[in-house]
Image 1 (cartoon, rainbow, N blue to C red):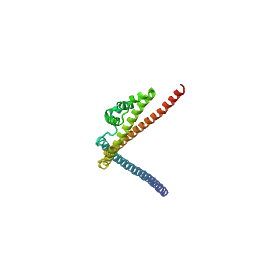
Image 2 (image 1 turned 45 degrees about the vertical axis):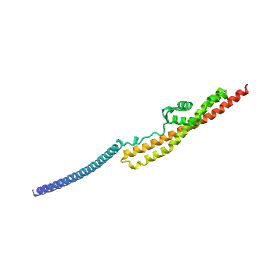
Image 3 (image 1 turned 30 degrees about the horizontal axis):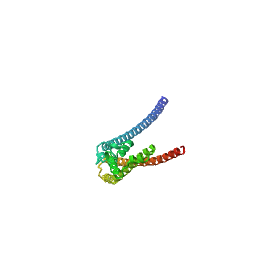
Image 4 (image 1 turned 180 degrees about the vertical axis):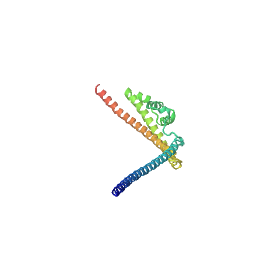
Amino acid sequence: MKRKIIMMIALMSISVSAHANWLEDIFKVLMATQGIQLGMLDGQNELLNVNKDILKSQKDIDSLMKQVNSHLTSHSGWGNYQSHDYQSYGDAARDWSSVMHMAEAGRGSGALGETIGEMANQFPSDRYAYSRGISDKRSQQYYALKSQTALAARAASQLDYNKIQDQITYQQMLQHQIEKTFDLKAAVDLSSRIQAEGNLINLEILRQTALINQQQAMTDLATVNAALANAKFLTK
């Protein structure tokens, strides 16, 4: 009987010990699981903080872009500030044929037409007197065209030269306004205005280059006419 009791007590001890080990293992697993969950929670919190920082940065960028946009959509007034046309010859000089017509008449409207009138009075050409002395039709046409081209080129050259100092003063006036701009839009508009004025001057230079080319073409035409006259003389 005593032996049975001892065996039961031993079995109970073993069972209690096994249960204790089993409970300890479960407790360890639960603790490890909780640690993992806490780590995941910390990671989620960090990710949430990062997203909050990103959102704040985006809001800051949006705010700055709105400020920039407000500075670029206002009306500064520099586009038309003390606007003055120093390049136009007038509506009567829109194309070369119109210029030749004014040169033929010895007068015209607009800045170039007035200058042509002044030049024509100083050195008047007389195509009729030339035609009475030279009967060749080709030579007569060349004289008329050459005299008109020379008159137009001289008038345009004088007109542009007389405007140079005014244009320099005008550019300097715009340059002095740079320090008076009060925001980004005004600074950009003034810079664009100065660039536009410079582009107009470049177009004026291009026009003078075209006049030089026209005069050179007339000189080349004289050579062609001389060659044709010689050929006609040799074939008589």
